[in-house]
Image (cartoon, rainbow, N blue to C red):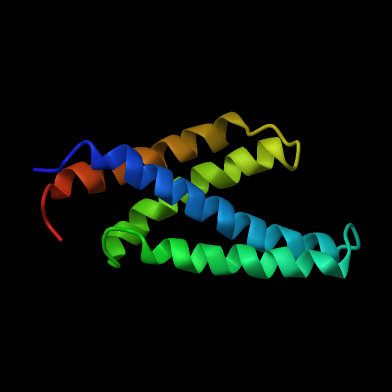
Length: 115
């Protein structure tokens, strides 16, 4: 059986990992598109290093864990779209992320204590 006390902590770690990944990719984009200085590459490198480090903190390095992380990444990317890019997610965006998160929940709950 799955320990339900670890689920919020794990999903919080997934969210922090996703934010580090998004920031590490977004800052170079600002520089490439001329919307920011080359100095944005320094925090981007730090953010991507944090992303890699955060990946090592996940409960297990398995496809199942990364599949679940993928769903949280999709949700974080849509939140980023809304808060950073100023683009309101569409109904289909929200339905899609709902499916992804539901799928992640099925993976997590369905495995119980499996590794």
